[in-house]
Image 1 (cartoon, rainbow, N blue to C red):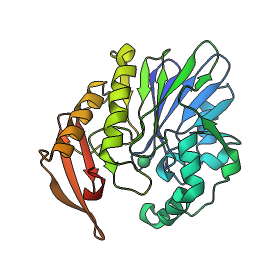
Image 2: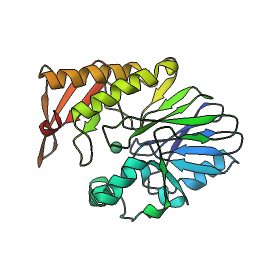
Image 3: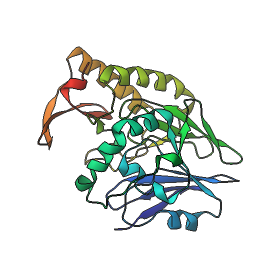
Amino acid sequence: MGYEIKELSDGFWKIRDSRGDTAYLIEGERQALLVDTAMDNEPIRPLVSGLTDKPVVLALTHAHIDHMYRCDEFDQVYIHEMDITDWKNGLGRVMRLSYPLFKVKRKRFNADNFVPLHDDSEIDLGGFSVKCLRVSGHTRGSVLFIDSRHRVVLCGDAAGLAMWLFLPYCTDVSTYKQNLEKAEKELLPYENYSFYRGHSEPTGAPPEPLSRQTFTDMHVLCEKLLAGTADLQKIDQLRWLPLFYAKNASAGMVVRKGKIK
Ligand SMILES: [Zn+2]
């Protein structure tokens, strides 16, 4: 157990837990932003307080426990309003059921500490702001965080080579496709930024950083899935739920057939 820390540029750190989940720390002039908490049995707050002397606020790319397990160490947790709604309507219960799968201690989170992010939210760190861009799919309230100081986009699980579109409260492929189209346009000014995802990916994945191209590749993959032309490979991830994998260049998706509509 324990974290691995890498300072990728001045005031920007990648923190990786022993399972390969990642969190990122962005330091501004007034405060620092921790994006996700990863999921380790050791607390993360003392670690980030050792990296920066600024007060640290926490924001989540989405409300899944492998991204928020240590969020009870913070008084306030920024989460997109759609994930807060879904959390209260049952996503929270589903997450608590998944503890044995991840082999971590059970805990309850206080939803009163969740502070809603909106589609146009910006978090001012002093000297620059981190912008939020919603890409509904993996969860309805999945967001990217865009940091213009360090020229990075933090994607969480919104896209990558193993994007999951089968858990409760995810969208269908059509909704995800529409959100990707919107994101591709909104990401145009950040064409040269470095894109980081929320997990270490399987062998054979393109090395980080990723780029905006992954969102374009994923958009094309959604079109192929909807047209019935994607090559769907059956995988045995969960015995009780038939899942399929499909891939297009730098984008890949684990999906259940009911979501392909
Ligand atoms: Zn997730």
